[in-house]
Image 1 (tube, rainbow, N blue to C red):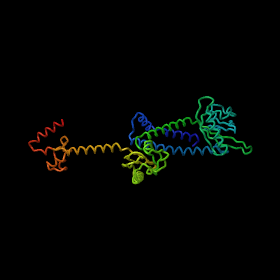
Image 2 (image 1 turned 180 degrees about the horizontal axis):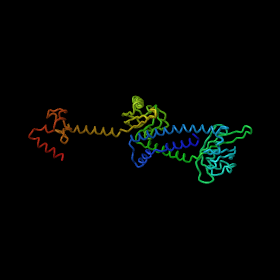
Image 3 (image 1 turned 90 degrees about the vertical axis):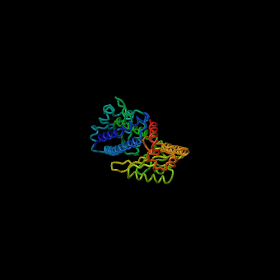
Length: 400
């Protein structure tokens, strides 16, 4: 592939990397106050992450090819040197004072100045911002002192006509052995579109992070060994720690686990998730302050194309409301049971056209039936035959 083909392919992949319509739609719902379901969020994050990893890997490979291409282009007497003026990329040569001594047609087109008029002008005069001029001078200084063979920087360039554009400059040095002078070779590329893609990608990453951090549930992104890569704000606030403190730690080593047994169970669950899919169970965590907190913990593996585990997603759902409600129901049942026991006569509660659901001990004493028998017995059978019709009418009237 040529340099331009490499750049075109990288740009196309970067555009794909920046698009995440599902997450953007979910983010819009979040801004409108609709909290996404945990399973939906986890699935979308997993799919988005796998797609990004595939695209990033290909971009990394193509970028390395591009770097090798640029290194080849600057070699003396390279076969591509005779294509200097017809190249699809802009090429400039400057002296030590940054004055242009040679420019090809693409550089002339990008800067909207005939190549012969470019000669003698300072490249720095085309750089828009003062801080970007300083950035370019620093890059020149680094290659001059051979800190790097090839240096690059991104700057805004202002052509003679038209609007400024965002450009990538790659430069290297050539020293004349007989005179000891130095020249700089620049590869000039218009990356305005790529820059917009990267900005869109950054915005997409910001939305992804917002969804991750705004979740009311504990969420953690782990590597294939169970070490923390990222953890959301809910979990950090619960543990009263920063991401810097927990990043790189094994998930089972975080201080909020209540006991050594819980930590051992977390380690075992990570192993099971890597070989058997999703693992889910209830466990308690102990915040630095306050009471223990019951959570519903799930661990799910994310695999690559070779079915290798590359990430683990840990999610903890707060069970305090459920546990409190269950405790409240138990207390209410205990109170109602004690009231039933204290009643002097027979008490029974029945379903419409159904068996008894609750009763006091007096019913068992008087009828001689045990609990299992009462559950299976028609409530009308507790009454003598002449009274059954009247009792049935009363029951039907009560349910109408």
